[in-house]
Length: 236
Image 1 (cartoon, rainbow, N blue to C red):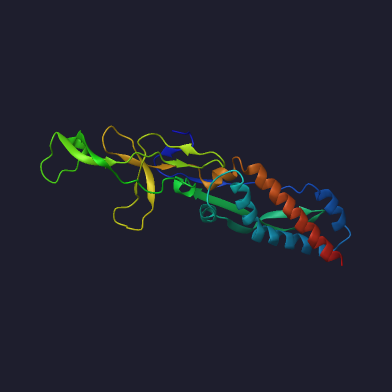
Image 2: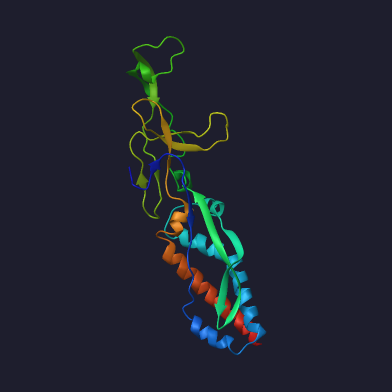
C-alpha cells in the first residue's frame, strides 16, 4: 500500500504559512507620502486578505493535491482578527491570520474509485465456514457468491493514482445510518475483525507540504496587487 494511506484513528492537525510582499520596500516608499491614508491602505489590504485568501489557499492546494473543495472548506479557515500586527513603513495596524485545523481525511475526498462494491460474482465458491454468517449452526465450509474483485484507488497527489493494498474493501461507515458514506476498510487482524477505515493526509498537512510554497507565493503576489491598489486610491 502507498505510504500516503494508513489505518487507525483520525489525527487532528494544524497548518500555517507566512506571507512576504516582494516589492514591499517600493510600496513602503509610497506610504511615506501618505498620512492617515497609509493606515487605511493597510487596513483595507488586511480586509482583502481575510476575505480573499481562503480562495487563494484552496487554489494552491488543488494545484498539488486531488482533494475536493468541500474538504478544504471544512478544515477552515478560522479567521482571527487582531491576532497579528501589520507594520509597513512605521505604520502599524491590527492584522489577521488564517488558521486551518482538520482531521486526516478518508480517500472519498480524493476521487476514489470505485465508489461502491462491484456486486457478487455469478459463480458460487467454497470458502472456509468461519468466513460465513450462517443462519443456523456453522459448518466447516460455505458455498457462496463471493464479491467481484476490485482495487480501490485515489488521487492524493495530483496526476498520480495510488492503489490501496489488496484486501481493501468498501462498506458503509455506519450500520445504523442509511445515508452514511461508503469508506474503504482494511482488516488489521488475522480474522474478519478488527477492521479500520483507511485514511490519508489532512488539509493542514497539505498546506504545510507540497502546496506551501505555492500558497505563500500566490497570497504574497495577490496581496501586493491589492496593497498597490489601495495606495493608489489613497493618493487620489
